[in-house]
Image (cartoon, rainbow, N blue to C red; front, side, top):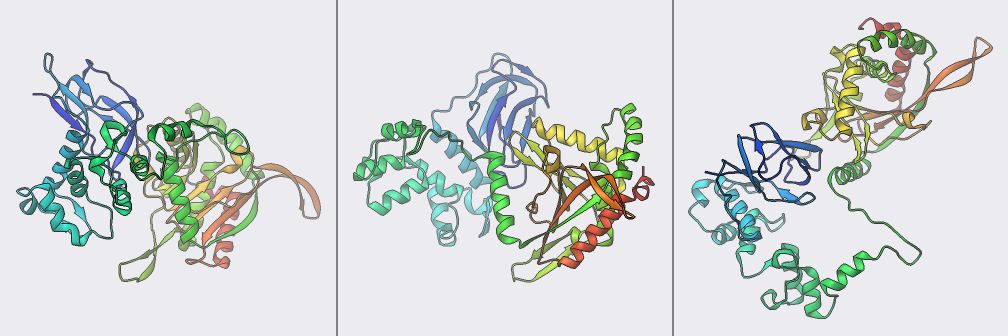
Length: 445
């Protein structure tokens, strides 16, 4: 019997993803754990493996389409088998949402137990929980109930129609799969344009002043936008800027770089900076903390006794932050190799979600692109982030004499709710001490 493989719950609260690329085609003979597709979620691009051996009988989505958790991605069977046919969109969505009811959904009202809902139809289930969902998003039960009705329309379209008194059963549907669109509702009331006119408007690539290009805010870029907005609005940021003389570190790195190359490792300054920051965090633990609150409004500062350092990586989809776990227990060469490996995975869109979680402190290296100064936004909910400027030769006065030294500017952005400027300055001074006296760090190599 053909096996219907559904888009699984990959964790982190992810409910949908976009098909980036199919790795198989209909008729392919595949093995268990072979990659079926690359799917972009709002966290990262994940590779979806096959759960069984067999032949690909059907791909239910095209590249670029959105798939929800529980949707049948691909049908796998044996030679000679035929894939079951889905009549239309209604079959797919109603089937998915009905199964969600059966296996139990979790919401603000708690678990919807199997015993209470398996034997009830979708409409009854929706009516039972209606009093508790008036201030939250509609449940999958409610959405399924609406799709089962005489017309197809999204909840926001139904709400709009109700507000203006439009009867959805009498409207001409122009949406994909026969859905009623908001434009259809507007046309019925004489307050909008037709779907055709709407599409023409979208094709226009200019405004009142000249040509423009539009790109949808979605996937990883959308998550970045949401997280940055949350960080900037919830955390009172303060920046502390200082500089460090890396002349001695540069000399040591030149020697160690040759040794590292023999092991296939590219040794940059970043692993030394990671070790310096970890050493300083141990002496100033509030920089390695997070502010937590419970449902009663009680707040506490939680200082982590582990050191997972996030490294911001520039990718084609935006800034991603893979995490070096237990950086305090790894050598500089180990860190150098791991940074390179994680950065390569992030840029090639095959990084695991687990590699993006668990960070306690973040480093962003805008200096690698030429910037001298910056005021980085904290990687929420962490307490601080360090930005690295470009290292350059500068004339510096040492013991009354001018000398050319290799100088880097460091910017610390910190959460002023958790710590004050004095603690931030002491932390930065300690980081600079380690960078300017790297012998203290080399003991761990």
